[in-house]
Every structure is written in structure tokens, then in C-alpha cells.
Length: 337
Length: 175
Image (cartoon, rainbow over all chains, first blue to last red; front, side):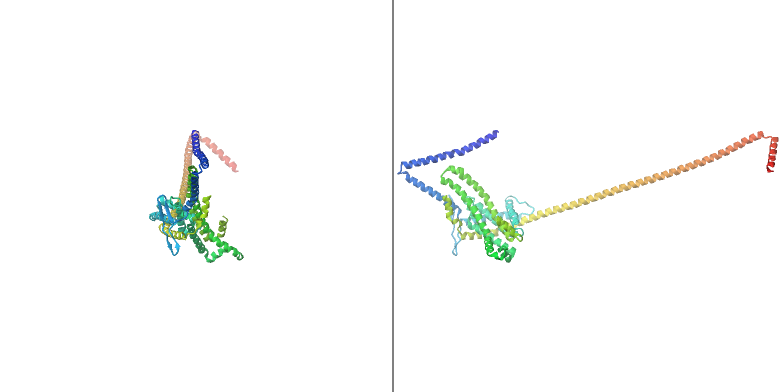
């Protein structure tokens, strides 16, 4: 009973601690505005200039917020490390094509380097390990992920002959996951938040899916599949629909990953900028910081989730394309989703 | 409001960047090849090996279990057989003993009966002999007594008279 009272009193003090500054701040804003009004009405000569400056500043700040957010999300040739400075990235043009090294390219390389280092350690351990030894630490953690992709994603969705696609699925999972996670690190950028990157990855999935379909059914079966198994009179409708259907899957993959990664960052940055736009510490304490931490944690989850979903759907599409029996029912089931 | 507007209007979110596509493809393929060589190959091999090892261990355990069960069953059978054998032996022994006992008892009884019969016959014989002896003795005694009586009571006249009368009787009867 006493303990309960103690907790209640603590909660009460917390509510007070939050409410009091809020009320004071509202009062301050009100006071400020009345003061402003009075000064505007009072000394017209001096203050308007200040007001104009202030207004211009406000407008600039708001526009800046959008610019800054876009700057954070979009690709560019500068790798900035504020406040220490920035690194200008080289511009390369080959045969009229612009293949400059950009921020996202650098992030891709960072991801690649981390992956190669990480897995050379893990792979080395495996080379040394006999079948009787149990893995530990980092190796064990990586094994859990690899085993998850192998069994629950590849084997469960593709079934027979899943080993051929394992290399791609594992690489794409860890690649996307690390890209997602590095976007949450200070100075990092989300390469998977760029539609060009996700499009390229989805294109790999697309080609793998089509090759799996061709391998499973042959060219004749592949073309027959395009007719949807309908009467020849309906082919005029069915073939374009099925043809578009081929491309909807990778496009869905592309946009899902890109939009998820971009949206989370925009939300975090917007929440932070709210306090700058409103110029209030209270908003920062009450809203921006806790909410952006919450979204950040959510993003952490989403990073894993989207990497998993990208891999999972790639495996699912490959599995559907290479399914021999009853794949029409499966596809109908997927379509109804 | 303005912020979201700026983001939407920026348009560069969806702008194509051939350079980035190129670098993504190249980087990804290279990473895939390297990882396949340094990581996926060894890891998957090790995992499969371990899986096989575990499977074979399970199989072996099952086999051992089956074997031990078979041995246990065999043992039980043997035990049951041995039990039956022992039972049989005991039963047979008992039966034999019973038979032997019955035999011996029967023989003994027969023997005793024979002995009793022999004893009885011997007793009978002895009795007869004793009786004979007794009879002879009694006859002798009677003869002796009769001799004495006769000796004392015998009288010539009387004898003559008796013989005469008897002769008379004989002659009359014959007629």
C-alpha cells in the first residue's frame, strides 16, 4: 500500500514536471505575442525591420527544413561529416554515362566492406570448425540468420532445388539489412532508401524468377503460362495482363523497400524539425525527442523486417515461378492478397 | 505542410540515376561472388555436414535403441524359455519323485504284504504242527490212560461173555 502510494506520488510529480513548463511556455508565447503586438503598435520605426528579418528567417527555416530533409535522404556527391567538414566525391564519366561516386555508392561500398570483413571472419571460423564443434558468439549469431534464411525463407518457399538460389537470397538479405541499418547510424545514409538501388536489387530478383520459371517449365510452358491457361479468344486480354503481372512483382519489391526506408527517415527528421520550426525546447523535450526515438526504434525493427520481406518475397516469387503442380492456385491465392 | 510539399515537389526521390544503378549492380555482384566464396560455401557446407551428423546420430541412436530392444526381447524370450525349462525340470523331477515314491511305497507295501503273508503261513504251519504234536500227545495220553483203565478193568469172564454175545449177535444178524 505504502509502495503504491509512493509510485502514485512519483507519477504525479512527473506529470507536474511535464505540465508546468508546458503551461509556462504557453504563457510565454502568449506574453511574447502581446509584447510583439505592443512593440509593433508602439515604435514603428525600429521594430518592423527586426520583424521582417524574423519573418524571413522563419520562412527560410521552414523551407530549410524541407531542404535539409531532402538533402539527408537524396543522393549527392558530398559526404558530409558536420561539424568536421565534408568529403567531395569524385565525378566519373565513361562514354557519356555519368557513373560518379555518390554518397549512396560509398554507403554500398561501406556495406560491402563490412559484409566481406564480417563474413571472412565467420567463414574462416567455419572452415576451421569440425562438424562436432558448436559455434559461439558472432559465428552463432550469423549462423542463426543464415539458418533462418536457408530453412524458413529459401527451403520453405522454393522447396526442391532451393540451394541454387541460396547465394543470392543470403547476399541480398545481409546486403539490404546492413544498408538499412547503416542508414540509422550517424553520418550514414540509407542506400536502400534510393529507388535506383532497390530497383537494381529487384531486377536481380526478377531475372532469377524468370530464369527459374524458364528452367522449370521450358520456353513452351513459360509462354503457355503467359496465356493464363485460358481460351485463345481471351488471349488478347490475358497476355497483356500476365505480361504486366511479370513486372508488378519486382516493382512492388522496389517500391516497398524504398518507400519504407525513406518514409521512416522523413518521419524522424520531420519530428526533429518540428522543434526547430516551432523554436521551442518544450516541443523538443515532449515531442521531438521521445517520438523520434520511438520512430528510430521502429526503424530498427523495420530495417530487419524489410530485409526479411525483400528476401522472403524474392524466394516466394522464385518458388511460385518454379512450382510444378498447383501453382495456379498458389498464384490465385497470392493475387487475392 | 510546406515541408511535405517541398518533399513531394522535389521529384528527385524518383529520379533515375544510371550511375548508381551501375554501381549497385557491380557492387552487389562482386559482394555476392566474394561472399559465396568466403562465407556461404563454408557455412552451408558446415551446416549441412552438421545436419547430416545430427541426422546420422539420431539414426544411430534409433538403431541402437532398436537393437537394444531386440536384445531385450531376446533376453526376455530366453528368460521365459529358461523359466519354462526350469519349471519343466522341476515338474518332471517332482513327477519322477512322485513316481519313485509311489513305486517304492508300492513295493514296500507289496513286500510287507508278502512278508505278512509269509509270516501268516508260517504261523499257520507252526500252528498245524503244534496241533499235530498236541494231537499225537493227546492221543498217546489217551491211549496210555485207556491202557491203564483197560489194564485195571479187564476181566476174562467178562470178556468171554461179551465176545460170546457178540458172536451170537453176528450170527443172528446174518440169518
